[in-house]
Image (cartoon, rainbow, N blue to C red; front, side, top):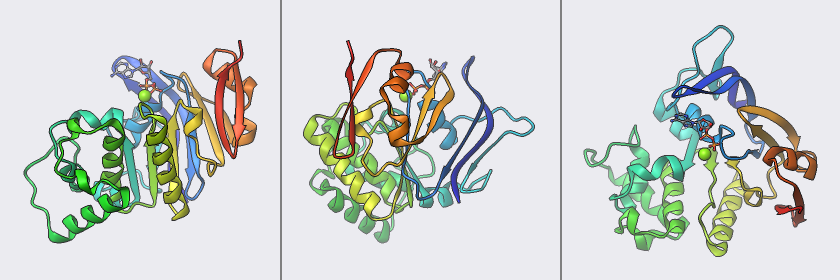
Length: 260
Ligand SMILES: Nc1ncnc2c1ncn2[C@@H]1O[C@H](COP(=O)(O)OP(=O)(O)O)[C@@H](O)[C@H]1O
Ligand SMILES: [Mg+2]
């Protein structure tokens, strides 16, 4: 089964055509990373997947999630958690921790304060915060948290539905070493518990060893797609980032270094 199936999609952001004829399939159970420089179209791709942007309606073009072209937001949430600090933080500034988690139960990211939550939902939010080690921060407002704490709350927001698939957008950017190592460890434990990860990033070093497939995205096009060890080469990354790159590797992790 495919989690994501994009066929010949043309997508605009304002007047800019970000994708023309983009085709991409991501299978369930395959741990995948999409790597691309700034401006490659990563955020646009995420917006396409969460319904914030749409592909131009034309013959032969389709965007399917879990095999369906039209989806009910609730059914989708139960299967797919999308976590993007960039796309989500603006809606959350004055919101308290526990409500950030509970906001996973809202239909849209922008609406707060009108819902009543049941005991089961509050219990689940409590469990998620315990699991992520953030229960002590539940009364704190989002803008009063460190970046690392905010990331955990955003992850918790997606996890209330216990989705089988998680899409993470640059999960560790802005985190210090300890916070990013802890976060990546958490992501790995979710993979071990059977979640499928789709990571979207420009940071080589946040690709967990479990990721098998890497897709390189540049200027709205897939320029490479395959086994991680065959895609993450100095030649390909030098071309991808338009700068000489050397690659270091340890214990299944990759790091990019300047080759000049
Ligand atoms: N709201 C917007 N209006 C116009 N152009 C946009 C908008 N958002 C993104 N773009 C353009 O679309 C392209 C892809 O951007 P984006 O998807 O944000 O890339 P990435 O997340 O990989 O950095 C870039 O050229 C960017 O300038
Ligand atoms: Mg982006």
